[in-house]
Length: 232
Image (cartoon, rainbow, N blue to C red; front, side, top):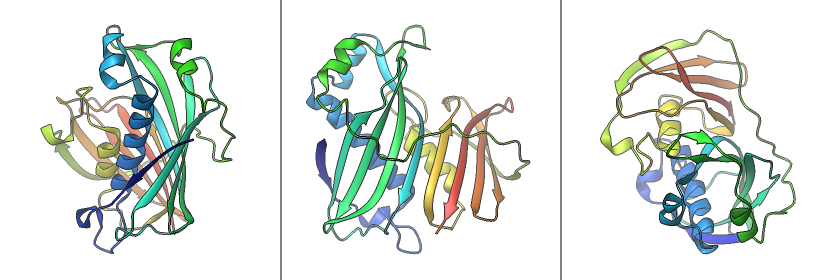
């Protein structure tokens, strides 16, 4: 397993003093990139081969609230590799306690043709953690036909974009959970389509018996991101 330590900042707290889910996802995303760098597949090397890892979605389970006052040890490894996708497991530890467990589903794309490709053998062989034990938290694509309530419409801002020139995965999750003041015991997010710089996006929410559903749609009424947040 690959391990890296992080520290949260005061700005990562929400109004109730909880570490924002966007900050958690940002750390999980970063540790995956650091793991890739450590085995010789930096972002620059992947781009030189016209390959990029894209994220299909998250399943994040909070066991105990994180504190920003203590460093967090993040542990990750690859599991459940398939032809086009691989599931990556994560654990976030503080003071010897497991605080967060998570799974992300990643896939590789040819960035010139912008279509999924088989995960190259050379990349899989670079990881010595490719057979990590399953964490019992499988990622499943969200699908629901509920009618959600319109919350707001907004343009994509430059600060939301990442190196792939679309809205960063953690940022779109932060946008989608904005205004939902229930701290998640579990968060499921499915990315159906990238949020692009030219998009005008609409946010939709619906309160449920166990939490919230959410959607991001673009100006063409296409669903870009789906969310199911289960409240503590």
